[in-house]
Length: 204
Image (cartoon, rainbow, N blue to C red; front, side, top):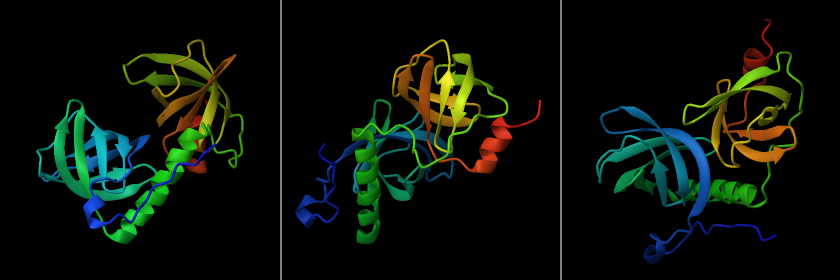
C-alpha cells in the first residue's frame, strides 16, 4: 500500500497549493474576543485547515486552535463554510515541517485502517459497565470487553457506523471496527493510565 506523504517546502508560488489531507480530529479554537469553542478538523495541510464547528468568527479574524495530535496552531479565517470555516495557517518553515510530518502520520494511519495502537496493553476494567454516547444525544449501555490507553472493545447491541463520533464515559473517540459482539473505538487522544483508572476502575 502506498504511503501518503506531504511536501512541506513549496516555492512561494505554490504556497496556496499544499496537499490537503482528510483527517478527523478534535480540538478547540479561540477567537479574537477570547471565547473558546469546540471544533472538528475535517481536512488540513501545513498551510490551511477546514474546521467544523457551531460558532465561527469573521473572515480576516485571527484564530488560535488547539488540536488533538497536532497541538497549537495560529492562523486567520479565510472563508466561512456551511458548517464551520477555513483558516490559513500562519507558521514558520520549521513549524510547517512539523505539521507535514504529523499530517503524514495521521494520513497513513487512516489509510492503513489502524484501529488502536497495539503497543498499549489491553486490560479488562474492574467495572466493565459503561454508557456509549453518540453526538445526536442517543446513548446505549455497553460492557467494556477490554481497554487500552488508545481505545476499547465494547459489547453493545447497536453498531454505530465506522467513523461515527462517540463518547465512552468522558472519553471522546470514534468507531473504528465492527465485530460479532459489538464495536471497537479509538480515543481521540491517548489517555493517561490514571485517567482510565479513575474512569473505569472506581469501586462501586
